[in-house]
Length: 357
Ligand SMILES: *Cc1c(COP(=O)(O)O)cnc(C)c1O
Image (cartoon, rainbow, N blue to C red; front, side, top):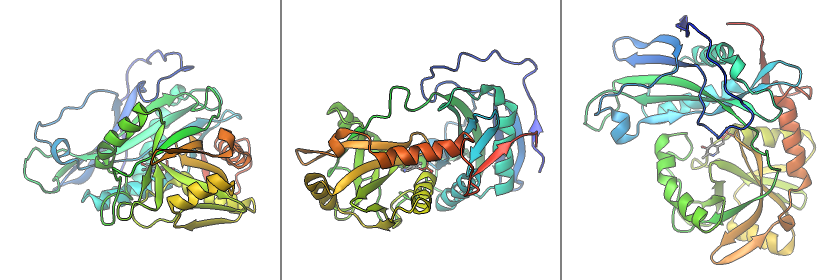
């Protein structure tokens, strides 16, 4: 299927991209594609960025039949535009779609849509090292009907946001709050897919942690409230003496692409790395005895987010004297080096955009 281009007649003046609040500045264009039962996915097009009209009974507004992805385009040190493992985001979009009864999209078409839209709005990619163009594909049910059932109509949208470097002020560890009141996910639920409803359900815990002065929530498993699962909207890693460990994917954890990259990269660097169950007790004991050398979250937005302080049941635990550790720094430098084209990519994770598609 060809993507129809209906571009703005005049180039928009691009604002100063030096200091951007996350997710509030959008580029000139967006990608749209519709689904209906008789036509399937049809009419892929790139159009001027605008508001979207919705039926007040649209299924998404009532029952949250919506999924999303998040990835970035980077303006390299060599002047080339790069995407990082975008096919994995497309594959995960379809995994999420399957879980929410949303019809799958053709992965080749979705990837082409991402590339074409980024190419059309390439002047919006900030040039400064560390900044990037955030890409947000999402799909939601648009049928106007109040019955609880899968929508018969969908809209697939891709929008773009230029974003500043996550660590403009320095690569400083965050403080996290372990909640034993709220859970993010449970077996059989939707914790392992990027479904909008997961995030609505996590807002209250996040707000409570913020009020107490913590940056993120550390989520425990929903059954025993004993095993560590994720931190905020990131996966989590612990560097114990001689072993890098992250919770195994048991169906309640989002399979992060950064998580997978860190596992593969750490092994490539010769660091013993395991996916296994990690109890909160093991973590706290490690912080007390010093066996836990480092802790960090991983995700597309921050890449690596060091954790310096953990609150659990009235007690605070300090990790690595609240300083960013050498492993977090090394993994961050390596991954961003790949993304900005400064390091030879031995994994085949990056692609460059050089010509229109
Ligand atoms: C998106 C997300 C992540 C990180 O995934 P990446 O592919 O690395 O960006 C981790 N946990 C949750 C809950 C997420 O939504």
